[in-house]
Image (cartoon, rainbow, N blue to C red):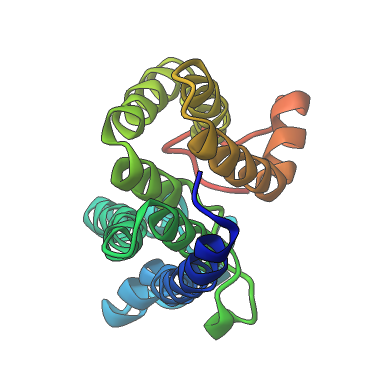
Length: 209
């Protein structure tokens, strides 16, 4: 175990790098690609249609599968990019970058802290930190979404499974991080959970009433 004076020298540097990675990750995560793409292509403000969300599922309600796919890809990439940048400063900085990107997507400063629900960025963070589990999320999401046609339910089940997988693998720092991300994801899906329980949730491909 390092002497206490070594910890005193290392800890401030580590915290500083984590804070830097978090801040940079937040700025990356807060880029509202769904909103930018729909405005650039003349489809208006995506926040004014459907659920009002800036993510790929709501972009799909503009009628453009291509824009929805591009939004999904970019939202995934910003999470992965934040982790990749942070990884140059160490594993904890990589985790801090991922957390920052996720929070940036949920609470972007540019949009008055009213952002998306975080599923795509969650996937990007998982792929960046430990890609097999991130890939497992995608497979689980596809299975549940195909069987039920509920995007929200697929995300809720897949995120819970992600935390469980990290716990089974005894990757405790990642299990804790994704536990936090999953709680936030569930909070952002509170209305979806209520509609699921009431049998009123919109299925993939249906118009939002």
